[in-house]
Image (cartoon, rainbow, N blue to C red; front, side):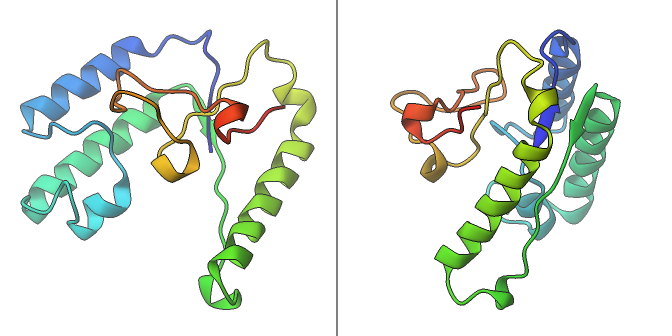
Length: 144
């Protein structure tokens, strides 16, 4: 999970990232590092050095932002099926939110942005760095 206080404007950093990626012939709506590293879609036709350059640009971008983040992990072999694995992640996320609830409630508005359709169905349009869609509770998002 990535946290960003909306009072900290990052539009110039996003514009710089967009321009830099376009100059590298990387015209993608968003970057997930796993496909970038594994040379999966949409990076399947890029050479290793091109993907490394994109990774470095993205890492530098993330390092300079006024954001914080946390990760949740689970060893897939420990769980018998995907339902148990999903429950393990739900438990970790709920525990994190419970532990940080006072901090999270200090904000007027909390928006959870989805990255996969199955987590939050989208009615129209395609997600992009410029047009992100919040995942409201009625579409499966979390409500605090």
